[in-house]
Length: 179
Image 1 (tube, rainbow, N blue to C red):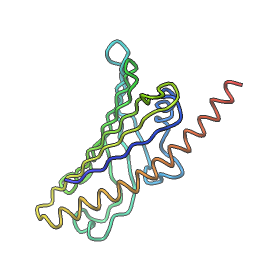
Image 2: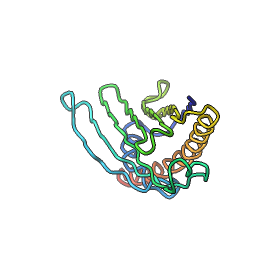
Image 3: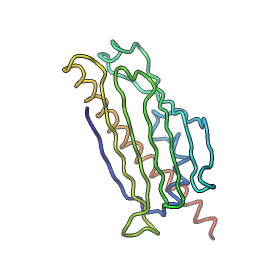
Image 4: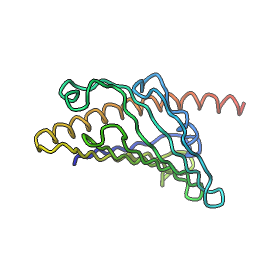
C-alpha cells in the first residue's frame, strides 16, 4: 500500500471555501474531470449536516502497460460521499474509484476546517489518499501503486491550481456583491 498526503491553507473563510467547493469542477486546469453528477443530497441531524453523494467522471490517458490489464479505455468513475457539518464547521469528503478496483483501489479523504490560528479568515485543507493494488505479483503491484500515486499527485497539483482560480472568481463576485 502506498499513500499520499497534502495540506494547504486557503486565505478565505471556511464558509466561502466550502461554498466554492461545489463549483470546483469542471475548470480549465483540471481537464481530467469531465463531469460531476449529484446522486443524492439530504439534510441530517435536524438540518445541521448536509450529506451529498456524487459520481465523478474522469478522462485521462493511461500508460500502455496498464492498458494490457484494463483494456483501451480512458474513462474512470469515482464515488464521493461528503458531509458538511455546520456545528463544527467541517467539510469531509471521502471517495473511492469504482473503475478497475481489482487492479488499483484509491481511498481518498479530504477535509476542510477553519484554521485553528485564524478561524475567521483561513481554511485548512487536508488530503489523504491510500492506494492498494489487487495485482497478485509484488513487482507489478508496486508498479501499479507507484503509478497511482504519481498520477494522483499530478492531478492534485492541477486540482489546487484549478480551485485557486475558482476561489479567485468567487472572491470577485463576493466583493462586487458587497459594494
